[in-house]
Length: 469
Image (cartoon, rainbow, N blue to C red):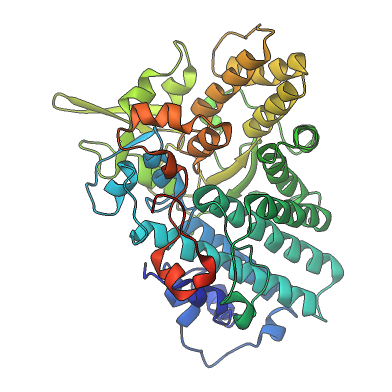
């Protein structure tokens, strides 16, 4: 992916005319630069025209979901957070030996690293496009109000979601809500508290606009519960524990979802524990995660689960049995994540890329309850996770022990899922203690990635650089 400057992905006009191509050819081009620089076709649509039709407004959002799936932080490809943050923390070992991946694995990033730049630029490209949809829908005179609310709610959710991940990786960042060139080329970074507040505001607004039910059976478009599930996470990160527990309870109590005790069914396309997922590119393809993580012979082409991670599973944990798999070549054995079981196409798609699922809501509520002193409620939620994993219930009455167990269960429940492990270590203040042991190159300043050098050069208002870079 070509490295674009910050101003280029935030200020070039959103090429809505490509939606005609989307409807007949393909939803997404894998290059960010292609997306914003493709020449005008003969059948050019104006921005106003695109948002006068529900069909083309839906296509604009479909294009953004394809971007999320195939590029940037949420992608299940080797360039996404599931791999990159897994390498950066203590989940994965790198086998590419590339000049891009090794600095991530060795915690030796520099401001000119290609991944540092690409995650930033692709994310702000996605945010810019979400803003274009929000503005286009708001200015539309032809869309019914219900459609305007739904589409703008989806775009608000995406805007909040991508900013959330940028905040975890880069720290203080700009929160972009418009498409004006003169404003965006001079943006400054907002504090973490300000960014969290903006994320929560967008998610609250999205939850009021999105419909109660899914608009399709595959749960690939956000509904009200999707916004609330993400809001529960954000409130937890903000230490708003009452609000986090309340939002999680709303999602848990929704009749749309049902608990699944068969670990091998949780990552299927039709799982009732899925809150939101990204649909595959075609009707026969499966998840990018399956293609990325699964290998059938060694050495691994991309990465493998670290030995110390595998050894840390509690005896009897069925997640180790069902969600990891060994591959032996000669005298060597490696392990790969096996949450997604399919690495190639099938007659019809059986696995999509899951972003939000029900287990997180139980662990959010467990943590929020424990921090409020409701240890009985916290243990009920925590033990739901443990018993599904084949582990005995915990009976401790000590808050610190319960909170420690919640973090442990998050580690083994969400490994290689979009950076949960690293973000949990960061927000709990335990990153230094854990990663300084497992990652010899770890420094306290590594808690944040550097702001890309190209972006600082293009916009001095983004200064100062993060500490340590």
